[in-house]
Length: 341
Image 1: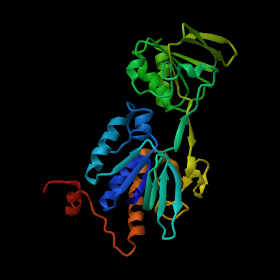
Image 2: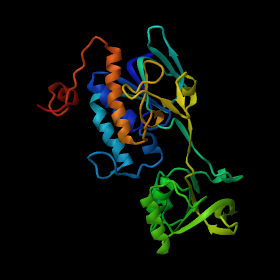
Image 3: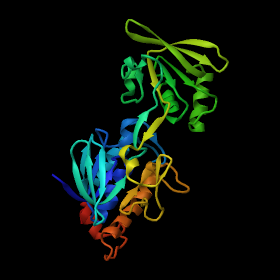
Image 4: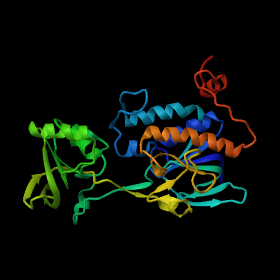
């Protein structure tokens, strides 16, 4: 059965969720599709317990808490979520509307599409050692869903970006030991995190090695250690009960790459007035889009979602004058949000 809607949002991360809110303020209803089995995008899938410090009005907010608050904010607009399914086709119809289908058999007819898919359908870059996949999600992890399962373990963290440093720092004092392995002396993480970790190594709370993983040791069907070759080609054998791999993500646009959109590498090019793509009626917000000066920040995606909503309203109702209403004082907005008189 085809679902009719004003807008289809592809992606249920923070920017996709806030897009629902901005559209709802303009009386536009959205259906939301996401390949993950839960809402929240990377905030839920990769770092639910990670603190975020640059959301306006929140000195610090956990990633999962941010998603929970966004869900509470959009509750008055009763969005429909279609999770665990991916768009497999998009057809532009003669009247300018779109027909979309998913790999789960869903079918949607909409007048506008917003792509808010973060980095797209992402896959962690794997640790490439023959047979290591046998320990996946038992002793080798690409996500931290439950930090407590690593407490009391000898943990080796692989990588030099924010995720690697953040989790290495959080596990110090909780894991039996923490060793960070990075392939070079140049980090991609926040300088403050690098400085903090170096201070812990100097105090003997953690260990830092520069090099690469050559092999692993096992006994009785369990991973017991890793062999590391440092930058001077010296080998080190490390005890390892749990290995956290943070080599980054490989973005995959999937079928979106076949929609005829103008791309800049793995990102979708948009304008900065409407955040519309090269195909009229298709918009992109959040990390998946590109324009000169683009910064991959959640707060930037929120701004993009607001402007995209006004553009979509004008696209769907070109003869209707759109008034900017302030949520603080507008009675009609208060009614939509269920604010008591």
